[in-house]
Length: 163
Figure 1 (cartoon, rainbow, N blue to C red):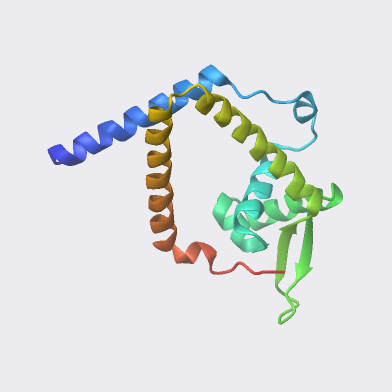
Figure 2: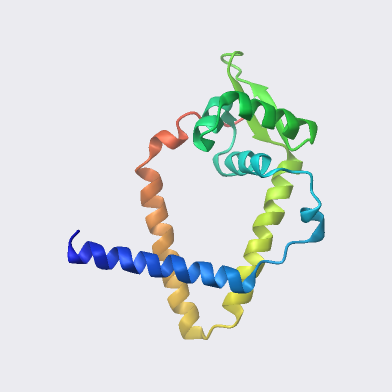
C-alpha cells in the first residue's frame, strides 16, 4: 500500500470511529411505540430497500439483502398483512411481480428518517457559523461523491419500475 493510500485509509478510519462515537453519545431517542412495534429487523430491511430503491422485483430485493427469494416472499407476505407493502403485477408481463410501499409504509420510514434528522439538527444547533460553513462544505462534498458513486453502479437500478 502506498503512503498516500495508507494515509487515506487512516483518515477514513478516523472519520468512521468519530461518527460512531458521536452516535454513541447522542443515542437517538426512540419513541416507545417503535420499541413495541411488531416489525422485525428483516421486515425493516425490506422496507428500507423499497424506500430507497422504489418498486422492486422480489428477486432484486433478495439479491440486495443477500437472502433467499423464499425468505423475501415470506417477509413481504407479512408486510402486506400489516399494510406496509403491496405487490403489483407488471402490466407488460404478469409473471413479474413488483413490491412497493403503501402510504403507511412510507409514513413509517419517513418518521424514522425524521427522528435521525432531528438528532442531526440538535448537533448542528450547537456549532458556530464558521463550523456550520465547514459542515455544509463537507455535506456538499459527500453529496457530490454519492452522486458519482451512484452513477458508477447503474446495475443497482436496472430492474426498478415506477408503478
